[in-house]
Image (cartoon, rainbow, N blue to C red; front, side, top):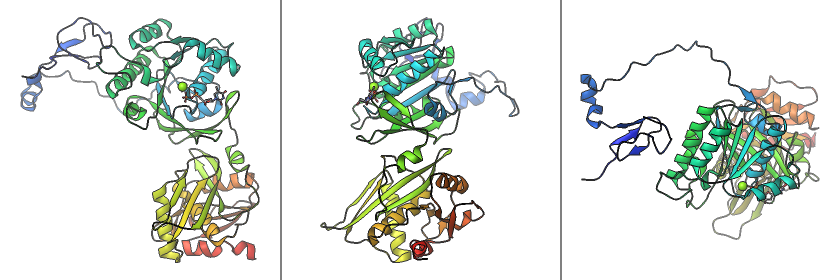
Length: 456
Ligand code: TYD
Ligand code: MG
């Protein structure tokens, strides 16, 4: 018969072969109990065997105190978190190696500690001297952050229990290991056990824990995805290599809006928050050229103007290329199909390239119309008028669907000096001085009006 674990810790769920007074997984006492599997069968439950304790139920109207929040002092990060960090919460920050996760959290810890909070930075990747050198380089070495270089969870949790800092940073979860789990650091079971231990510590102590996780492509090391469900907040740090701009995006947040983004610039002095991202993304736009369209978007709660660039060229291949950077390739295929079917504009035999300037990734369907505008302009070899912004979602029927917050989009466009907009008719009630909007109901109408403003 196969061996099985007949005991389980009621605090952390860790299985045990035999009874023990102290769970070697979570360190709790008197929580290891024998599993009586027979009593869990449905017939026994129905018969009343192994009966549970009735739980206290509460109503929806119970008014809880809002969770306690503290600002880290890095405005973009505080905003993405939903207005500072909530105590007793666990935040996972994922991103490609080298994107700037360690730098950002070292800056956050340093700022927080310099303003009177207590912060502990645990590095499993670098020696303390390396972290100190980095702090020195970005001018933060005088901040009272406490550092340690260690990978064993047992000692780390004991240290945190003893110090109970306001915030703790774990860099990175893939280097940490729990000694009772019999697999290499970075494996799925280790990662789950490690994150579970830190989440439990956060809930028990009231500290906020930031967990850094590398996004891995080859599957050798488990990525942050496998532990997203264990933590309160998940942020991803993204950006193109070779661009200095970095986006921090909230994909899950129990204490604030998801989809909020923070924009940073990587400089010689670490990461700097970008207060006006629209101005930044449009700053290196040259003279009006074919294939360029400005999209008035919304990321999270904030309007964001970005430039879509397209290039259409004769293809040398049997199946033409469709290269996309910063936008969904399937969505591009859909826009092309609708242009072909509803407007008779086809791209067979032509390579098509689409890029969003600045290295940002846009996921909003409202950008469909900007994509269509850029492609049509590239194909016609004719620049769009430089004072125009575009937004709207294209449906398969060719109709333009309404999008969220049209007013905010137009206000941002006006602020950045644009004076014309092409938008779905559903937003017609929005009237803004200084912006002359053309309200459109379908794609053929949009194609028709694209250059009309120039001709008048
Ligand atoms: P890092 O924070 O170590 O990335 P991660 O922890 O996500 O792996 O950032 C590494 C990159 O950032 C590295 O290529 C150097 C660059 N960098 C700067 O450009 N300026 C700076 O001030 C710092 C500290 C790093
Ligand atoms: Mg790092």
